[in-house]
Length: 96
Image (tube, rainbow, N blue to C red; front, side, top):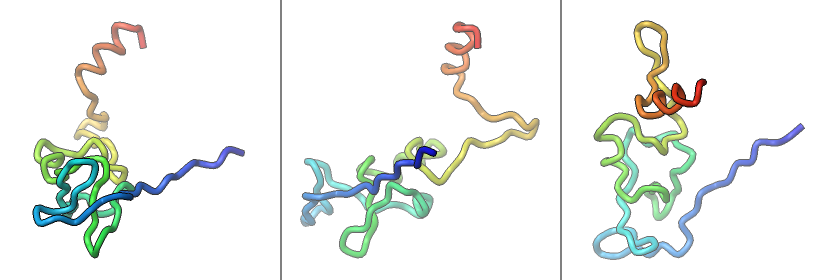
């Protein structure tokens, strides 16, 4: 039986500066409330940061963050899962 491989994200080499946490040349903002529960969030100096995206609040402006591991696709009132229209057209073209 295959085990699911879980890797803990890390931010080795991150340095706290006057502007904020500097990691790989980016200034990172702490995670927002909607990010709580995500497996990608990493603690650093009493705050949690997302190593995948430097500005987590901006990922939530247009809806659900596509990096969020704790959020699943929404089901509409008709009981259908909301699908990206571009992906749906490509699937239809392939015959799926």
